[in-house]
Image 1 (cartoon, rainbow, N blue to C red):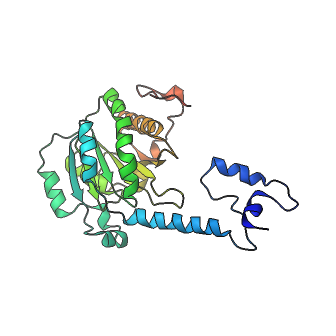
Image 2: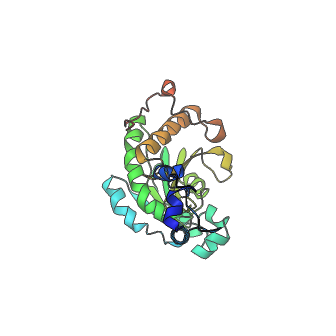
Image 3: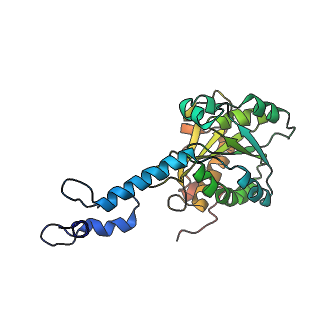
Length: 269
């Protein structure tokens, strides 16, 4: 029996019900087999996905490519680096990715902007491909909600060699009330371009991971931009009302009874 027959049929010639389910997920199901091994085609696909994930981790963050589209949205930008001097150091020393370089800290300290309600930080993280693809469309969907809430927005900070906690360091220097970090997530074998969102109320460098709210898998094939922007806006509204974030702020945005100013600006298709 060849690979293709094995994938589409069970023993006895009956259709394989798993084959139909493949159209509903990018997960690796119903791959078939050749003896005790994967079919050659699926093994090659796995190798390709693994290579794409590795490439996403090492792809340089071309932050300058985001400046013009963000300016077209009426947003100014600042570019900073973490204390990790290069990608190799960043991958080996997570602690350095959590704090600003000396030059970037001095630049932000002397920038002179009036403290804003919200700082947006766009960071490469472990997948700059995710940031290149998802950050601008997400911010575009978020801006109407920020206007609705009357929250002021500081310059968008584009951060190189960044871990999530770098957002707290940036926002503390800029004296923002809340920070939203848009960062490339660790690539999966079916999602090398997934964006994560981390929101922290009252950011400072001693904040714990449990004091942030996370929205993950933001991409068209996962949580799409309108839904992600709504969830984030709902969390921001609640954070400013309750002055907290993290495990004490549950995401209940799917409960219409708890909607206040922030209402979905989209319809479920």
